[in-house]
Length: 302
Ligand code: SF4
Picture 1 (cartoon, rainbow, N blue to C red):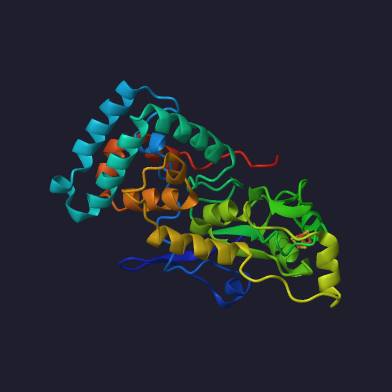
Picture 2 (cartoon, helix red, strand yellow):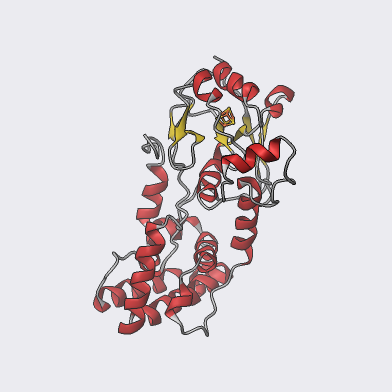
């Protein structure tokens, strides 16, 4: 079976070179926004300090001192400034007993609700290593007709909560079967996507509202207006990426409750990703390991 879609690297971008036919089946988040997408990054202060939830003040102090020495801007230049500031905010928050209790509760909830982006796809990878395309269903458009599950049952399944199709296994079927599913889909909501963008698309999809299927059916028959804009996962992914580029953590904000939001997690990830790679590898080996174990993750509704 031909597997194609090869990669072109330029100075600071990553893009796929596709044939005209492959491009017909392909959709992507704007590549200029989408760098470092497959890298897991800390998204709360406990992760930033390499600590378990509920770590003691002694652990917090020891970890903070070691990391602050490692990332010091005198050693790493301007790229480390922002993370050094965030480490200070993390330290002062977690060393305050009251603020730490509040932050701990928020961190538990934040993780449980799946708000922390870890850069790892949830669908299982069965493709070849050199394959750079993945398959993705835009569940905000899917009408749950099941055609794709008949064409490529080892790739698509029905997700029970919303009754929409979802890819549980990447390349579980031959490419022709997947393309047939794409061609049979009545609402064009299945696409090949850049494998590097898959984790983000699956992540933002969780927060995309799904319309009631009856309303979708009325919309398709022309009895209702057009679909609300900016709700599909591709638009949402681009919004998320723009937020990650601009997000800030306010050093003067003393409220622990306001220090764990999607925006602060995005700011932390951006500052961390700005560090030289060898510093990240040295200071946060568990995140590097997470990235390396990306393959073979269990599908999320099997
Ligand atoms: S064919 Fe399209 S609309 Fe039908 S279940 Fe599959 S993804 Fe959804």
